[in-house]
Image (tube, rainbow, N blue to C red; front, side, top):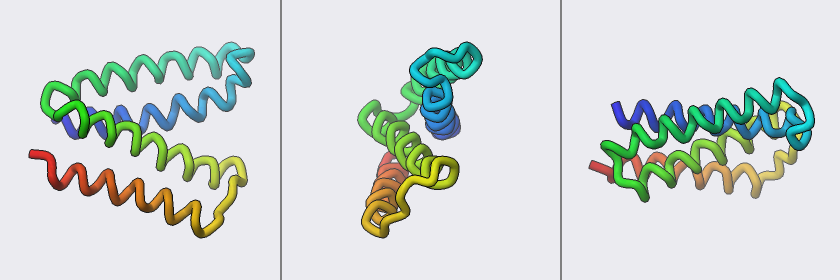
Length: 105
């Protein structure tokens, strides 16, 4: 169950990062409320995951899911660069996430 909490925590990290973009520096009410709510939910789920996953692994995976997901969302929704080196770097982060999952008991 810890890995499920961690995965969902990573997805909510993506959500709050996108919410922060739409909040325009916390000047728009509902995107700001959404962002703050998803930050809280993400951290809560991360704390639940830490019951069964070592902190170094959990934090790296959580941050990695958020990083990869937010970078890909930037490409899809905000026309950010699809330079080959950028995409390869995102892929390396994803490989690292999978590697951590595979080597963690």
